[in-house]
Length: 313
Length: 293
Image 1 (cartoon, rainbow over the protein chains, first blue to last red):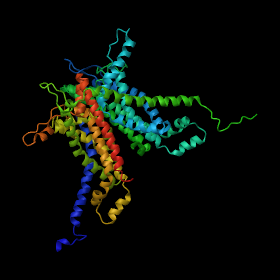
Image 2 (image 1 turned 180 degrees about the vertical axis):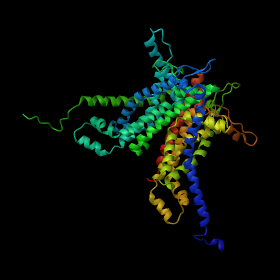
Image 3 (image 1 turned 135 degrees about the vertical axis):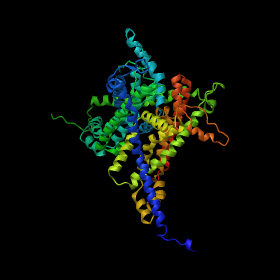
Image 4 (image 1 turned 120 degrees about the horizontal axis):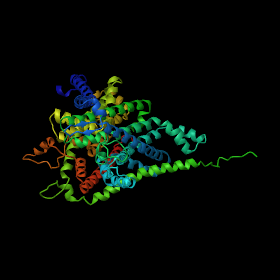
């Protein structure tokens, strides 16, 4: 009957091994995120730098002529970088006020039942694949913007018509795409403001609107800044939605110019690029990556200062 | 005479009304945009969705255009991605929540997880193309795409599992350890079942992200649209993993590029229905499996 008796110390050895193995396996799992970020960084640098030595850093970053397939190829991406910055800036300029006001609406002024319908709808908006936004951009926005373009420039012989595929269309698509991010995070940070702030303000005689703009929004500042920074990240990194909407010409980012973003430059030429051209595309990827890392560092700073949990939920 | 003000005498601030108006206008813009997008896609997509659209593959010979191959590719990529990322993500969350002591290592892991969720998909695409495609010589294949996406959804799963583990009461842990369970036994039989709703939410959110992903897949999984060949013993199903395969979003992008808007709207509608379904499912499961209620 030996094997039927149990000892509390009998299986100590196997248990100990299993325990140790479990601990080791979990730490390995946890280190994968670190490994991934390090290898992405290293690979972006390895594949992005050769072109800098071949073409020259100044020529790439400050050159304005993009003729990768010409007999004497030129690889200036200054306009591409500027387009990404200007495009993101305008998208934030349009998207953040609308998003913030919608968040105020949901958190404060909306009737409960209406908010109950709108909130899940906004979540759904966040889940729509970016290519679908692109599709609507081509078929709805571009024709509308083209009409505007015709009306504005019909007497201007120097204007190159873009058929509506220009910076405005891309900015509008980006602004719509950052809305859900801005709304969700701003709303939860507005909700996270302690109730007695609002009660005190109302008790002192401030109106609801005064309370919202003088008390609630300043108190939720760090969450709102986080929302904006995340919005910047999303706008600058978006590729597929705008690749067919922006027109894809390498031009100075004026509202009615056909433009190319950092992301769309990679998407549109990667499939057929070769040699130096391909290496330069990776350099563009590296530039984008550097922007993103900067945004992440800013985000990390902002979140440390504010209420992290309000932002996450 | 002293002017007497009653608290019932509300002073109207014209500015308030104006700002109220602005709030309502902005909110209606957001709501109308969403409603407009859904209705527009549904209206234009319905006409191209019929049975053969869903069950055939594009063929010049038979003159058909369908998305069956893309649906199968999407399923392949979802499945393989999750097989890789769920154990890693859950394991990472267990380490962070149950084993790790606060310190530099935990900060580093949390910072990198945060960074990973902020990297745009096009960067993942470039990395996957160079690392999995060229360095590991997997080329354009479903496996390359799935490996790339596994890194991308890792933070989603880690974070959701971590939140779920945090919400398991400490009394469960001390109770289990107090009656002599070892740590791993406690995690396996008490913590993981209690944290299951959070883990499943993370998985479904990841599926949503995979279904909608395009930029990370364009240079990794490629754009094949054929159904896997079965082969004699079904080995074709496994060979498919090493062949290129475009998901629904990739096919949508390619159709759009070629100007085939009818097909594009059909796929867009299928995607919207999927996203909507996934959204409802997440809500339902989170509600249903909430053990703390």
